[in-house]
Length: 110
Length: 121
Image (cartoon, rainbow over all chains, first blue to last red; front, side):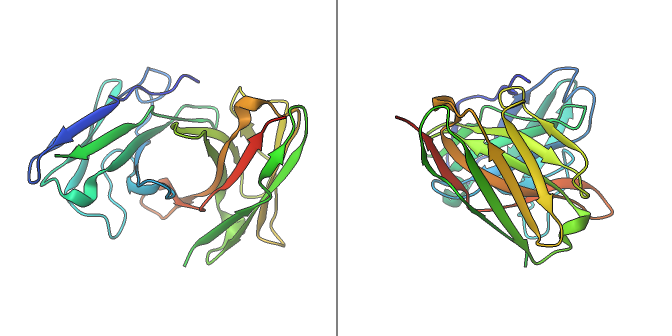
């Protein structure tokens, strides 16, 4: 049950696009299309922004998109806005009714 | 509106016990899988446990297996996390969260605001 690996921080300017990677293994991301992404602002509960890799819940901006290649999932934020400054976590089903989260990435809008 | 409200957190000595509760409303509670996820101060999210809709199936992270017990009362729309033999490393905000299948996919979609557990002497 090792955490999925994310970069500690990613930064970008307003309007730019950034991509956050989430590296797993054959036991989690490599075996299931069940990766979710969460956004968390300081002192707040996490908010679901993508599920099953590419699906957006109702109300989530289409500036958020996801993809997967092999054992790595990715979250892309297009048209970066100040409100996107937050921590982002990936999460994958890991088999046997267990889940694993990523190490988290702090996005800074510079 | 889906609402999850955790309670029961507080300060407990190492080796002690605590029971967290999570009151759910705004959805058909008995149909959904539910989770506990924790976050140590300044750290990332860590999955703790999952329970089936009828409460008969539970799984745990290795770090809490044998010490924590996840249960639910579908007549009261409430989850419980019994935490025994607590260690300093269990100090965290504990979130309950819903896993919902909407016909097109499944996701952990709603979270409570969390309750802080501090294990310290």
